Amino acid sequence: MLQTYDYPQYDYIQSPEQINGQAVRHPLVIVGGGPVGLTMALDCAQRGIKTILIDNNNTVSVGSRAVCYAKRPLEIWDRLACGERMSNKGVGWSKGKVFFKDDLAYQFDLLPETGHKMPAMINLQQYYLEQYLVDKCYENPLIELRWKHNLISLTQHDEHSDLKVETPDGIFSIEADWLIACDGANSKIRDMVKAEFTGHFFQDRFLIADVVMKADYPAERWFWFDPPFHRNQSVLLHKQSDNLWRIDFQLGWDADPEEEKKTENILPRIKAMLTDPNSKFGKNVEFELEWSSIYQFACRRVDNFRYGRVLFAGDSAHQVSPFGARGANTGVQDADNLAWKLALIIQGDAPIKLIDTYNEERAFAADDNLLNSTRSTDFITPKTKGSRYFRDAILELAEDTQFAKPFVNSGRLSVPTPYKKSSLNSADQADNLFDSDMTPGTNCTDAPIIMNGKDAWLLNQLGEGFRLLCFGDKPTADVSIGNITAKILHIGSDIIDQKGLLTERFDGQKGAVYLIRPDQHVAARWREFDLKKIQQAIKTATCNLG
Amino acid sequence: MSPIKAELNDQLNIADPDGFYQELIDAQRGLDDDKQQLMNAKLIIILANQIGDRDILSAAIQLAEPK
Ligand SMILES: Cc1cc2nc3c(=O)[nH]c(=O)nc-3n(C[C@H](O)[C@H](O)[C@H](O)COP(=O)(O)OP(=O)(O)OC[C@H]3O[C@@H](n4cnc5c(N)ncnc54)[C@H](O)[C@@H]3O)c2cc1C
Image (tube, rainbow over all chains, first blue to last red):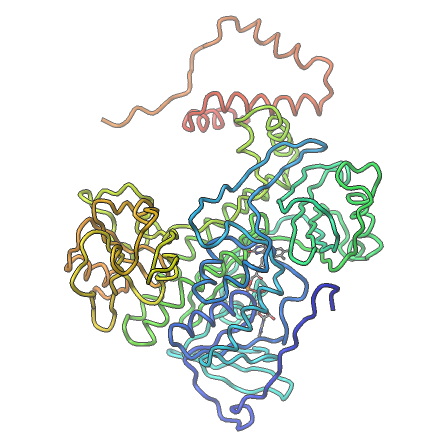
């Protein structure tokens, strides 16, 4: 138990199939109840898939791992009806400061554009986040959560997998048409299907400490390079909910994790920062250590997100260093990308090859994330003497010049990667010019609107199926291809753009039609409503071209 | 016609090479090794920013590789 949080204990229930000893075939089994598995379950169930989620534990994340959640995942969770609870409980922030030794080297403001429902960034302990997701799962009759179910083996067949699962009542079999591996960075499923997981480990260790303190530091991200209270290493401070603060201490490769783990060795590090009379930062701040852990970070990804009917998502598919808060943030976007595709395939409305675009789009995003976090890590923990000089050169220059500030890389915070070259896009045509960065493959930006006479948000109107966002004249009918219907959302009748922001952000003044995917990404756009082109684009976006 | 790619200047571009060299050496006289390295790194970043052109910078990095 923590001082500020009681871990929920979810009930283990023996499944009827284990009692009967009769293996049952399920359309979808998700392995792992972390942020990604839980989000995946909600998204799949929302799209009509009956979902079994198994987890080998029966509680939420022990200790707070992820802290920062960015706008895009919050928008996804809002689509799944739990984003508001998270943003209400979380601590919103947009400013950051970077110190070098004693001095302020650089400060930034994410300067969030107004007119978005979700904030740029919130901090929230991972256990709250998971708890809210679990609560939502329990509300959905299509989801069955099976706690204390440990996957121990997997055999793949042409169209399904056989799973052996261990519970407190012994071992039994489950069959799954589709299996989504959300079993985290140390995924056993990767080994079971012989997937490669490559990249590099950083020769560095970090002490992560959650500290309860009543301090009036602002809710900002503070990062120190080589501060007097922790010489030659970096330190990061973040505010979380309930007066809990996260402090990351870089320890270096030589640190002995067993020794560093001991409370008697952790406290002096925190005291040097918070209570030492010589500390420029904090003097006599009263604090209590709530939780701590030692980590070594890596940047790696699985070679393919799809192995037959086994799909990888979240940390099992890609592991990034935490600078830039990208792990959970990007994992949740895997779910966003996969659920609608899987639903179309299971319903028979798209061919199985649609699932390969999950690898295409999300491996592309993972590589972008890995690149960014590798670069940040190289800046924060220079590998050679030479790169250390360059790093320090930039930090010194940043104090005195404008041009050096943008070089300072204490973590580039997570933003979504547009699927610019995706095979699901219908590219802009030359006669199709837009003054808007809502290009095909990009997630739709939010905007305030009026609906049924009340204030509302654009993104809350998107995400059920395909949508046609129509500026200009109202088209006469929705567009269908087989069972897939793109419903019209007309600006001017269905929704009113009173502030004009929606029209501005999509460059809709001269009339425009946007085809929006179920994951709120733009598939195609035109200046005019052209039935043939729209039908073609829907086919392209669902791999139904034949 | 292919676009003209910026190229590294192969010719001397500083009016007074000996004077410049001396200024560079003098500026580091009395600095310990560590400070010299740091100063060199700062100089590289300052000058690189002044040049700005990514093609030229890439060509310069290549040219500077030890033999
Ligand atoms: C110190 C630290 C700070 C971080 N900060 C951030 C941040 O600020 N922002 C951010 O976005 N990310 C951050 N991350 C990363 C984030 O915590 C992870 O990316 C995220 O937890 C991944 O979610 P997941 O669901 O993929 O995997 P996990 O959270 O690891 O969940 C995997 C689940 O699978 C279960 N499981 C595993 N094997 C089996 C099995 N065989 N059978 C059944 N169940 C199984 C596990 O019990 C677990 O519940 C941070 C990570 C660390 C360590």
